[in-house]
Length: 196
Image (cartoon, rainbow, N blue to C red; front, side):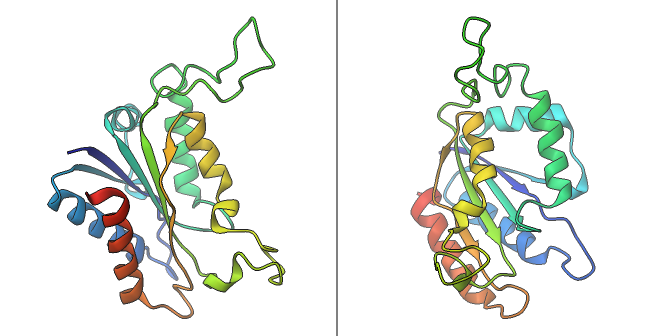
């Protein structure tokens, strides 16, 4: 089948120890391995080796980014991972620089990626309710979607020439959770986009 790298980017806090993201990571690993895929998991907050993580990205046919949305982005430890791993990978392993050349220094920024053919999926958890998104009447996101909010993650992946699978999101996981329904939707999402 295929090689799948799962990055669990949760940062444990006393009020949010990361159990849901760990559970989603474990569910994905089990479901995908049961379908014959080879799966590697990195739990970012537990530490990592930069060169091994670059090799994991090169090995993977698909990368799943599993993380809680913290202050409209990834947790700090996951941002640190990206700063360290992705910057080191600019040496040609993940990207041939930033895509520009001496002949055209103003063109093709971000088009030097070497992970052509690699797919990625964002799988995120929110304290925000589902109704906060895609509704112009909601003041904060003003009609913006989950993918609009997560555009920096999509651009990071595009920088490496990865192609997107549909995003999965679990909403209202702290104040009004329905984890059983989230697990059911997650299982269906994996089956539709990855497990086959």
